[in-house]
Length: 113
Image 1 (cartoon, rainbow, N blue to C red):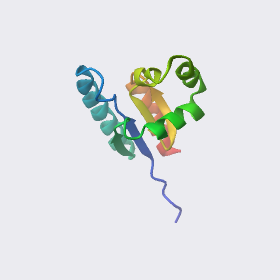
Image 2 (cartoon, one colour; image 1 turned 135 degrees about the horizontal axis):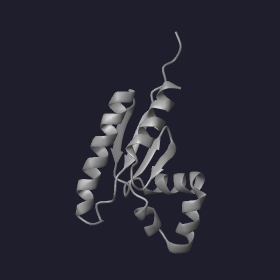
Image 3 (cartoon, helix red, strand yellow; image 1 turned 30 degrees about the vertical axis):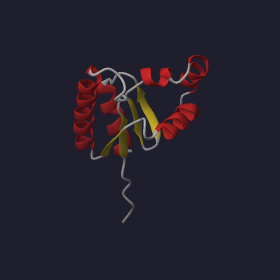
Image 4 (cartoon, rainbow, N blue to C red; image 1 turned 90 degrees about the horizontal axis):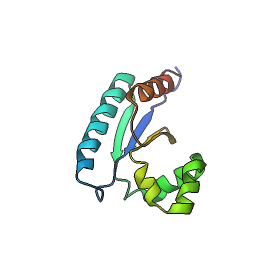
C-alpha cells in the first residue's frame, strides 16, 4: 500500500491591523477555502500573518520575485496589500483577491495528482 500524501492549504488572513471591513472579507475567504478543501479532501488552516511574518516574507522572496521587487522599492505595505495569501503544500497559489474557480481547479488538481 502506498503512502497517502496529505495536502494542506493555509490562509494568511488580512492582518487585523487593517480596516474593520477586512474582518468580513477574512470570514468569507475562510468559508470559501474550508468548503473547497472539504470537497477536495485537503487540510485547511488559518494563520495570522503578523505572527508568521518571517515565514511569509521568505516565501514571497523565494516564490514571487515580482512582488518582492515591489517590497524592496516601496516597503512591507506591498505585502499587506497582497492579502489574503493562500499557500498550498508550501507554495503560494494566490496573492490578493480570491478567484474561487481558479483556486478550486488548483486545489483539486494537486490533490488528485
